[in-house]
Length: 229
Image (cartoon, rainbow, N blue to C red):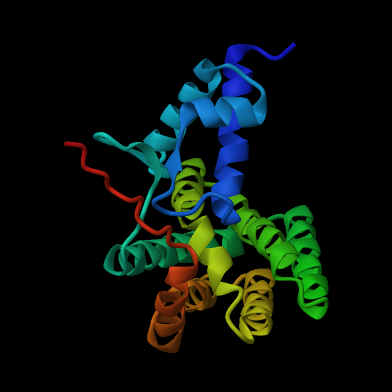
């Protein structure tokens, strides 16, 4: 039997996933009652799930609007990607030095899965395989604190990283960049791995323009404001 805690954690994971894939969009209001009805639970685990998501920065609570999916402006988004790039670089540098043979095999398996999704022109599957690929590098750093920081920011950026994969030719470019990263890690070249991951994640130039142009696909139109006399 699920406890209230387990139920709220399960709901948190489900709502987080729905935000990541665009079912709940930035700025969208998340009503406790509606969510409770949708998931067939009481409001208590829904409220606890939203509190967890708020602590992660994925949703925010606003006066007179309740809980909404967090909105990230272009400037903050670029700043977050800058930090993500450095965290990934640090993970990669350590992973190149510390990954075991078994961990190399897991990384190669994730890389193979990315190739299959790319060849199938399936950005949704690639999104999940891409997460597995990067997750293998985080874990391969063998630094629990660094891994937690990378995972935390990665979770906040999930909707936007998914959006990037829908830009023309990005799947193939991403896979080719992964291939270079894999080779550098297996060769034990930490500095090259760090440089490659930093370039892979940093949003600049044309990638910045493409991302900004795509943000409107995630944006929810403002709710109408009614005045009562």
